[in-house]
Image 1 (cartoon, one colour):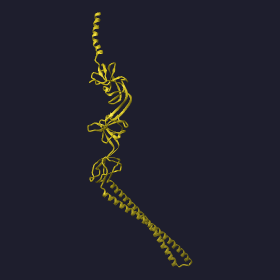
Image 2 (cartoon, one colour; image 1 turned 30 degrees about the vertical axis):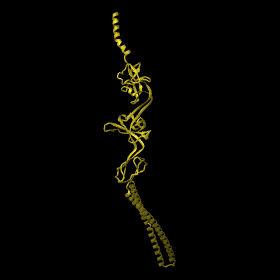
Image 3 (cartoon, helix red, strand yellow; image 1 turned 90 degrees about the vertical axis):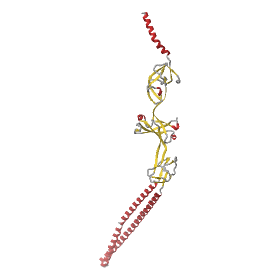
Image 4 (cartoon, helix red, strand yellow; image 1 turned 180 degrees about the vertical axis):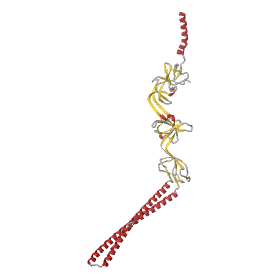
Length: 408
């Protein structure tokens, strides 16, 4: 019995000895670890390619008139106000047409005035004739009544009565004629209306001629900078042919394409970081002001969502046409537990140092990006997080030595 126990003890010792040796004497691997802390974490969405600085307005200014260029009173790079003359086209023929239309209008206005004066004079004459005829009729009537009484009394002969009766009849006809002549005033009124209508037509003709002449003066539709002049003095231009490029740089924005998969993460009003090659290392702040209502299908068959951003600060550094890298801050949190994103394995595992050994933990994460991830559970504040997860020998339970940096 004692011999059997002794044999078993020898066997157990033989098995346990290597395990004990490995546990106490295995060579630890070097790892880099940091204590878990709290800080600021961002959920970001980056454009899939560089965006472009776009002007608030960028127009190719053209002519609405066929002609030749007389002068170009502006230069490239010059800042102009709305209404500034940009290009002057030859307008000698148009000047003549305007003067002809103005002369016709003046003649029409004179005709209108003369017709009105003539109508007023005729109206006065007609009224005077009626008044005179009425007075004559009244006088003839009184004479007839007087002779009639004398005739009844035998103081007047029948021939006298006939004479005064005829005079009263003639005076009545003269009054009727004078009264009828007043109807010609209506004709005069129609002549006045016709002359007034003619004046309106001539005014419209002058307005048309003036508008045509104004087309020879190409003016700035808005305040901005003359970016390019596309023609020279003496060149012929036609309707719709671009003459110059005018850019409104008082308001610029950045337009950038984002993957359609990020559509649910982007919203109006979100902040964004904008970076320019000309100012490396400087973050400019932008704000999402427009999201395209449609997804664009590109030649490479990718689908993108165009987003426009207003530059909140540093706008004077943005030159139209520059390329810009855009990162939208979809979400952000402060004073939360976080880990470097590179320390996570498949976005769900992390290694913690416990009693000199690496211990794998399942980690629940929240918002974050390529740099940092919020920790919601699985590891705690102050624990030592292994960041050098690329070490080949790293595995759950291996002995580790924490160093500031890994040796080559």
